[in-house]
Every structure is written in structure tokens, then in C-alpha cells.
Image (spheres, rainbow, N blue to C red):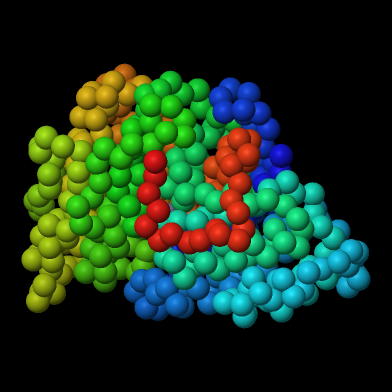
Length: 394
Ligand code: KG4
Ligand code: ZN
């Protein structure tokens, strides 16, 4: 089955074409036939974060070029004369709220034959609603033009499914292929991203029970806010991580102490806003030296890691989990990966995680998660498909 994945939930525009085969488990395999990802990091840098209205316009600008790049070489060009009927009136209606998209898409459809695609998979939530809508309306338009069904995908399930994949061959993303790690349930998913921090119990594939979540800031949000306090660019995670590694390389012991919020509380919830405030106390109204910034970055990363690892281990014990699936943008963090891997090895549970370049948002994860729904004929009705900014797992 060939699935076209579309991701626009936050500030990354992703379009991908994945070919997948087999049922969930050891006979599953996939390859990425085309993949385009454009990140709005420059805009974020300029404004220090993501603004929904601005991000929405960027998605609208980026989607057709991303589709073109993804299908390059796969979809035959018609030289401007498209075969068959194009429902232009219908497209106009579907893209009523995305006026920037319509002319680009009409031109694209006129110049390209219908590609060999079986289904569309699009993120329906959670995320920024104006952004989600662009992707959804784009999928609805393609579905009408090409007469193929749509799967509505939960973005967090996308992160989970991505981390269950064992990648065998990475060639600049395109031409990449892989299969699935052997996994024994019950498993836990630790999802850490810019908008979410959740511990999810999976007794079987596709069944999710959220057993813990953040009570305030998400882990990625805390990384981004602390980075900003230290004068580092957006998104802050990778910059904090780089400074923390530098600090570890030249000073073996820590010189700053930050709290480990909720670490020893008997539950699976998290809280990161106190940690962020503790950092603020250290830097406000002061000139902070480069060395101090590095020490703060290191202690902050250690504190977040200790809490994430501590709570996850406790959940592994409580639920007898055999595996932990680590997903979401913050899971690109090397220190968190290493510490969790070490702790889980000791506890006798397996760590499943994807290559760091697929930890942050992308459309491959949406196509892969969509495939398993398509296998079960779980398609959305394009007429009633809606964006849900706070869509929950389970
Ligand atoms: O999953 P994601 O791409 O978008 C959301 O769905 O939110 O996650 C983005 C988050 C940002 O907060 C970013 O700072 C963080 O992931 N991030 C990192 C690292 N790379 C990205 N945080 C810590 N260390 C990293 N290496
Ligand atoms: Zn994400």
C-alpha cells in the first residue's frame, strides 16, 4: 500500500510517500519513496516561537512545493493537459478557507497525472488548529481530485509508531527502508515534545491509556523557555543540549543545583514550570557568563532527565512493561536517550527509539501510523473531518 502522509500540526510542513507492506509485527516493512520537510525555524528565530496565523500561511505556501518534491519522478507530468475531469468547483469549495493553496494546487493537478497512491494520511490533532486545518483541507482536496480515501491520524500516535520502526537504510531520508522492532506488550510510551509530556500504557498495539502527564509546561516547552532565558535561539532544545555537553566535557562535577519536581511523588505526572522559574531566579537582572550558562544548561538537562527516567522506571515496575517507546521532538536529546537506555537495561526492559532526525515532527510518522488504520479500513469521512487541537490518545 502506498500512503501519502501530510503533517502541518505545528511549524514543520511535511509531505511524504511511504510504501508499506504486511500486518503489525515481524512481517511489516516499509520504504520511503519521497519525503519533503520544510521547517519554519527562521520565522521562529525571528519571533522567538510559533504564531499560529503566521505558521498557517507558511504551511499554505509550502504544501504544494512539498508535494511536488515528494512525487518527483513518481507522478508523470502531463505537459499541462490533464487527463480526465478535475472537479475544480469542488476544490474551490474545499479550499474556501485556504485561498493561497487553491491556484497552486489547481496548476499542480493540471500538470500531473494521478499518482499511484492508495490512501492519504493527515494529522487531525493535537496541534495548532489553524495549522491542522491547512493540512486537512489539502488532504480533502487531493482526496476529491484523485478519488482516494483519507485516514485521520493522531500526531502523538505518529510519534509512537515512528519509534517502533527499526531503520535499516538511511540515504538522506529518501530511499530509506525499515521494519518493526520485536515488541512485547505491555509497553509504555514516553512522549516528550514541544506541546506534550505523557506516559502512555499500551496493553496492545493501538490501545492507549494515559497514566501520567505534565501538569504545566511540556518538556520541550521548558527547554525552549530556558534557552530563551540564556539568550539561545528557538527551538532551544538542541542548543541547551550542546551547552550541557560542553559543560560535562570540562567540569566533572556540577556547580549549580536545580530541583527535580515531582520526582519522588507517588504518581506518573510531571511538572516543569518550577524548574523553569528556578532557572529564571539564577539569571534575572544579572550578567551571566558563558561558563555559568553552560553549567545551567547541564544542570537543567540533568534535572529533566532525572525526572523523566525516574518516573518512567517507576511505571515500568508498576505495570510490568517489557518495552519503553520514546518519542517526540525532545527524544532527539542524546543525554536523555543514553540515561534512559542505561536505566532500562538495568531494569530488563527494552528501549525503542527512532533515529534523531525522525524524532521531531515529520510526515513519515503520519504515513506509517495511517497505514495501520488503512489496513483496518478506518477511513475518515472527508465531509466531516475536522481539526482537533486537543485530540487525545485512546
Ligand atoms: O515533536 P516536536 O518536533 O513538535 C511538537 O509536536 O511539539 O518537538 C519539538 C520540541 C521543541 O520544544 C524542541 O526544543 C525539542 O523538541 N527538541 C529538543 C531537542 N531537539 C528538539 N529538546 C531537547 N534536546 C534536543 N536535542
Ligand atoms: Zn510532535
